Image 1 (cartoon, rainbow, N blue to C red):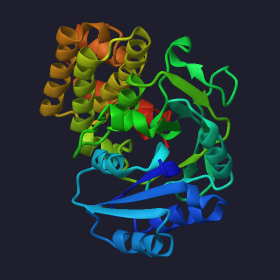
Image 2 (image 1 turned 180 degrees about the horizontal axis):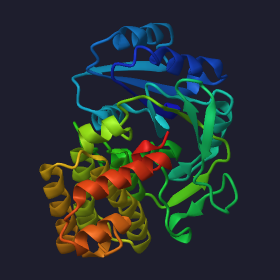
Image 3 (image 1 turned 135 degrees about the vertical axis):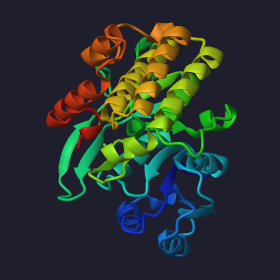
Length: 337
């Protein structure tokens, strides 16, 4: 590998933010050790032109791939095919990496030999630009040391915390579903399935922008793309049956997919309570119970679903309204900002 870290930047109509995303890399000392792959996913704005400015000035560090629109997963697949870094990390074109911590991270990756690295990530508000939270998947283990994953137990790192050895992606021919939202879960679980060691890095690297309407976890995003979330769950449940064999990976799959299933029930409660949505909810509930019984329990989906099951799903509209109002009031699930 020629570089220490390949960064795959998913860029679809991000002309307002891409310049800031790319400019942050210019503030570090070790730009020459980065392989920054900007994947223009069929943008119709000036995303391509902005990216070209950087590839022309810094051709040894910035590359541009122009492709037809295929969704977030397709940008990863395109980057997998050309990545030259020892390690691989994903970045969305409206987020950025910490310029304060990236040099230290590169130094660590140069000497690191583990399959996965988990590092905290920051959330920042799109309107105020203020930091709103720090999310970490840090355990009570020493930092920057190689640890066998099977010694950890359940490991479910959020996608933004994850850095993976590039050879894991190439050797195992990892491919992410295209033209589909919510495939970050697929990426994390497939990588986890082929990894044996992990290290924890103390400093946050990824900075995630909150507050954009239309994000996949916003109410408008959920109502538009909830079918993709359900498809992802069912696809990964089938993947687990066919491809996951070790107990520690199965335990991690179960923890992560159980969380995704809980979100799916919350999504159905956040939809307009139509007859169509009610039927889809019932079908999903019955499918889990019949085909994936290890993921099903009467408590699945909380008290709302428990009530609906016991009353043959009568009252879906009222329960959905009350649940949505309560979740919004408490900033839960899809209303979290």
